[in-house]
Image (cartoon, rainbow, N blue to C red; front, side, top):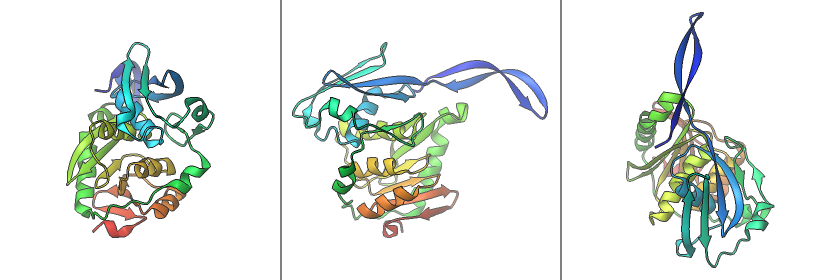
Length: 259
């Protein structure tokens, strides 16, 4: 469960000030080590650190096979996750030199390499999704976010399969919330190729990359996509739905999947 800290503040309402205790979401650093080498430090809402670390590495293409993972250790007092893998084709030192500061909340990081885009595989899922399921699932996710209701300081993400929310995660970073879900699916051997990914934040190229890395066919958001996200989604036949609010939505790419 994400943690909350209270602060004494002055709230101004209708021109009058009053002292109140305000709940604020907790933000902490999480440093990921791969085979003993420091790889990256993420700023996150303290929950599901192992899943976040694995989801980040999976969505960045650093880890592709669960059987290669030898151990995952979280050192709570230090805010460190150390992941040991075998037969891994990526050198942590080489990856560190290719970091890209993304448009994500809290300065998201991506190990983007120019050749990654060209190597993207097209989405193979032919599954179609009813508009009502997307709209109802988004509404349910919004209602589920108790942490957001209390603090207004987190993003939400959900994985929907067969019309039901399978996983729901929150974080100060929309990338992190998604990586927590992808890590859970990876560790639990749950395929994503017929699933719907919901996010409360905008859909950027990094979000499309993360969804595409695990074969997710549809990404839907309450917010807007970027131009590069749309272009990338078109290339890999991934469906983007934005502004999913009330009974409306905008379908930007691969519109045939939403019926």
